[in-house]
Amino acid sequence: MKPLFTPDNHPLILAPMADLTHAGFRLLIDHYGGCDLFYSEMIDARLYRQGGPLEKYYDSVEPGSDKVIFQLIGADREDMTASALKLARLNPAGIDINMGCSAPHIIKVKAGCALMRDRTKAAELVKSLRDALPPEIAVSAKLRLGEREDGEALISFASSLEQAGADFLVLHPKTRKEKAARIPRKEYIGLLQRELNIPVVANGHINSPAEYKLCREKQQPGGTMIGRQATRQPWFFALLKDQAPHQIDLEECWDRFYELLQLHQPPEFHKTRARRFSLYFSENLRFGYHLHASKIANAKSAEEMDQYYREYFAQHREEQNVIT
Image (cartoon, rainbow, N blue to C red):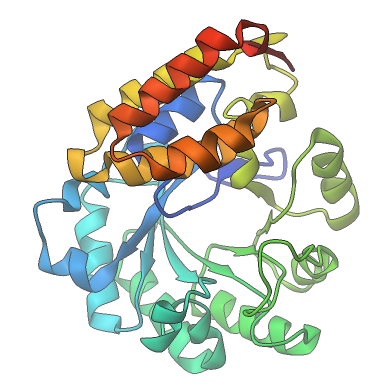
């Protein structure tokens, strides 16, 4: 397997997003030019270790095992290690430990961003996975700033993960309690990259090629991770690579998403995944807010959502194509 990071390679990475970065969505991104690495949805280590009828939909390797990084969430070392070993049989590019999720139910079980409160435990999780996995499978962690803005504490925490064997880190530079609207403090990405000897990936509010270029120039991260903007524009990675087509057919994009969703996700997941995608994708449309808020949000099924989109494009043919 080729190295994920080299001096001449700045990987573009799809961020892990609940209800979004499933196999169907990853294949949609790949269709429009793709990126270098695709994160999975976060996988509950305890539930995955126990197994279940829906687990195969979380550990699929589309669009290719050498491009997929599985993200695990949990706080129990045995669960995390056992699940990592189970996932390792699929030969992924890497296994990531979620240390950034701030959802209350995740914090309650001392996982996600709560791990940043205990540097020793977090480092032990990294070391356990690094010792258990073959060297060609990267071990990483996705972080926030922690409970508060403190550069020295962040460096100390990240350094302990590096010493424990992390191959790279991802930093979303917000504190635990800060919401999506808060602009991330990207200077901490550059700070961390200068202090560590492993790549630090930039994540958070990179919504245009200009912002991408500015972040690379000022912070010099090892890679760039994109989340919501790639959902709004599945062709966004192609824009960053200056490879996007001049025109995108939005109706075709929705149709392809819906088809891939049906092919790669169980019926139990269709409604939540379609609704979540629509929340961002509808921003491309002049009346997208009304479409999503009044119809998609209240739809009883993914089939009903699909019908609403078909009706919308039939009524607004002038919006079918968007110029990139």
